[in-house]
Length: 133
Image 1 (tube, one colour):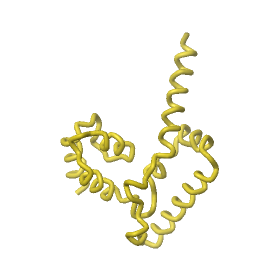
Image 2 (cartoon, rainbow, N blue to C red):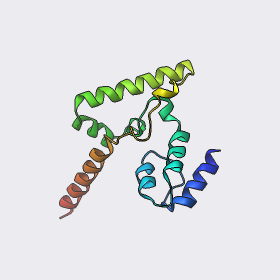
Image 3 (tube, one colour):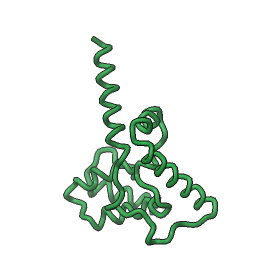
């Protein structure tokens, strides 16, 4: 099922390297005029992390840049993120999901970490460029 979903998204969205369904692809999916809101919601639901109350930025792989970004956002946002991750881990251990009314909706899923990560990547690129000269 997931292979069919990925192929369909790749064909319809014309996104380069869309061979995988990542949370980072959703902003590009929203901007693309070929994909309507109903397909965006369907893809978001099929990703599955929303059933545990997680947001897209909660499931990013924890790299050095992500750890640095976590130090730059307010502490209460980090605490909320940690709560969501611990709750999802607990639900996974119990082999349960949240009640449907508590699932994260696409409209409520705000990118709180991605803008900071992009800023850090720009700073790192600028730093490398500066060190070259």
